[in-house]
Length: 282
Image 1 (cartoon, one colour):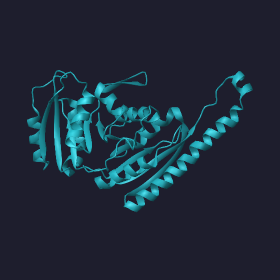
Image 2 (image 1 turned 30 degrees about the vertical axis):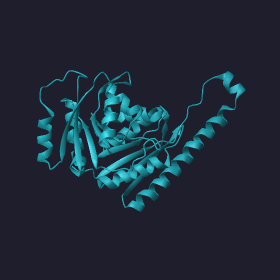
Image 3 (image 1 turned 90 degrees about the horizontal axis):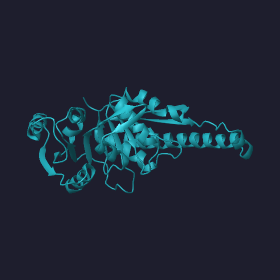
């Protein structure tokens, strides 16, 4: 299945999505040959229920200012997105919603369930985007791509070289299947197996995955790397640098506990500071 209809989620509060994130999402849609929609939400900021705070501060005025800030960001972002997407010929739709901050992840997830793929531009600071990404990855049933923030990530968006993190698991198998349209577009796909990092649940080697991908016309190379005591995120980052990778495909590990997500180490690291765009599937 091709990625015909994709979605980018734009954040309006407390900080808006950068223009570079919008441009990168549109460029990725072009590379995928997809149409892209954007969703932005004017958030409803709850007023603190403190009589003392209200006596010291003009709480209604503060809340009103924050609402206006979010509404202005949403309008500006969607205007920028429409212009960029129309210029590249990939525009599909803009979606403007209103909701409390606490309901934002579930709202976007509802839309994501009816899209082929959802993109989240990810800032370097730990904010609402990571909460949203976790909810999407484990709740939408569809793949998610997180985009690093510029200027730390300076490559142009492309799909020339793709790295697949392969550990023989159900999650990595699901990620490969979901990402197959991307893998078929890539000029080179590196199947990365990290040894001496954890015990594999199967003895099946990456060779079998390479055969499967080759049957779909994918140009594959096998890369086996020894963790050598390093954490998995460091291994991934070094390998992607050596391969000059444009995208990492990986299965997402984690589970929900009382509405909080307990993430696997690699998943957490790639969400905190993705070194390249990361395609995550669960």
